[in-house]
Image 1 (cartoon, rainbow, N blue to C red):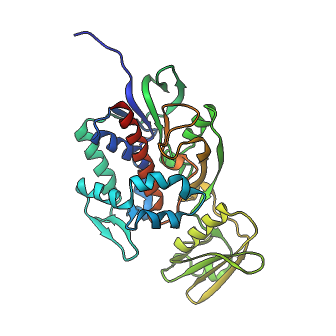
Image 2: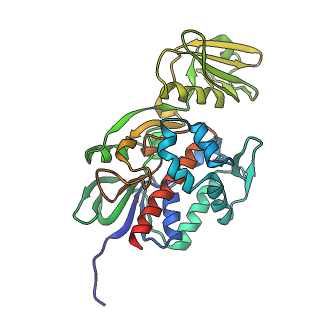
Image 3: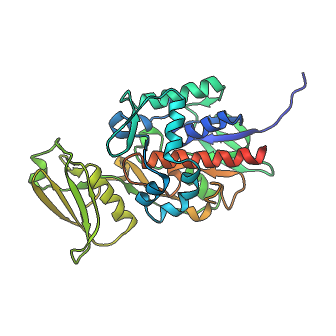
Length: 351
């Protein structure tokens, strides 16, 4: 039998939420692909989400999700979320045998209460479809060619017609999110906006917090005030007390807002009958944050396709981009939707 040399249609760099979803879409569309994952196991960060329970999306219309995400992110992700709204994400997991549980506010979890259920669903689908998954395989470089790319790893190189960077941000680096994708993009001429902590807590030594360390208050609230005392943003939800300060959904969403709208501010948090006021508090470091704000500039990526405007055949999905949303299933939804759009674009061109 004669040997032929041809490129793999799609190399997916990163085996996290966006990369696994992209590979699943490719498998369902009969698009040949290969996943290259830095760590020993894929989906490490998925296993951490929602304290190991994996809030994988929110049962709201796409328009509501876009309104909650807000600008400047919403305009860029609108085509992706319109094509792959939360309802489609949920039905896709159910089709893979994942039973789901809906919370009163619309958050969706696997009924098992275990994030591993989601990772196993990806693994079963890719195994049954015969999709190769190379673990312990960090990519060391990308070289655009006349047709496709040379993708280099420590021990081998491969030829790919298209490349999808789905390497995540830089939070929780032990899961493999170490900024590889942003570095590759920058080396290929893309702008990368500063990487900052998103959805993280604020530090304080207030004794009212320290004496309640380890306690969670579901009926809490937090708001961001400008120097005149005007409320800029508010959120009702849980407030958690830690040894180092305050966290929880209400605090996380306020912290994200302050990063996207920089300037002097006061944080006011209410919990357990207490009202805490913090002037320009310091956020916890990015390595501890739920999401990374910043990444490959959306100005350099076509929102209708997720393809680079600078390097044809190079696509992006998920947190490697400068996109983020509130806590509560939004960020996994963004990872899934952008991955779906990227792969759908590639499939439409090859057919």
